[in-house]
Image 1 (cartoon, helix red, strand yellow):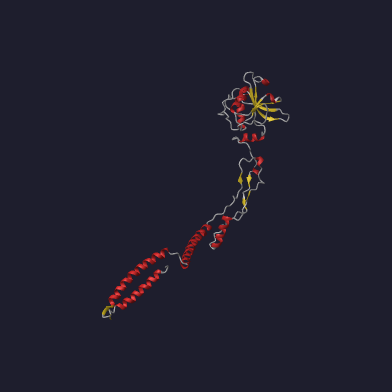
Image 2: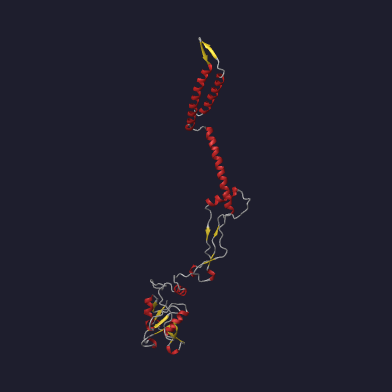
Length: 322
């Protein structure tokens, strides 16, 4: 059934032979009757041609639905192999081109600066080093396809690499832990760790729009000196005795303990001989070993000049920190 087309071709060959014989048109007497051989052969030949055409069409239909033979399977496998070779060759050509332009990951030549580090010798991070096999950067045109293929496969499937970060050069304790926008405040907050109020916001409103205080007043000097030290201060905190309450409303840290150079010391009216109506303010310039504080102060009669005084009873005053 599978080779029905071949059989049909054999039948057509027999028909052709018979037609050659029929061309002689021989008549043979038989029982008193004359037989026209040519006519017989012509009739038979026409009938056989029709039968052959039907058989060939049937054979073609059967070949289409018939199961594949071993020979046809071998031929199909060879054709698929040739197709795979063509596809593989194109892929390898593209792979070689990609490998020639491959870029290896390279660590930066100079150390990366760490943000918010307080010392220059501890503000560097050693670049991470990759200890696994790195991609080859060779552009040598002589590299064979097998070598390129093995390198790419190893990069895609290998999980042997290990990243390492050298932490020996990092001094984490020296980095600012405060989130204050003002770097001076951030440093002071680090120094006052464990003493800050739980709800303290280092980025509170400062109320600063410029020095609005009268020249040579104690409030004028306190504003001027705080700016010299890089510390926040409000422009409209009121008379000297009102500064602590006004600063506390803005979010400043206020208590009765001197903590840092630059703290504002607040005097109530008449305290330590100050003005009986307006009070007074000054700036802490030094905290002494015995707990006393030395200040810088100014007054309207001094025409912008300052004076210094040391106070022992420090907890009798209020101090504005930052």
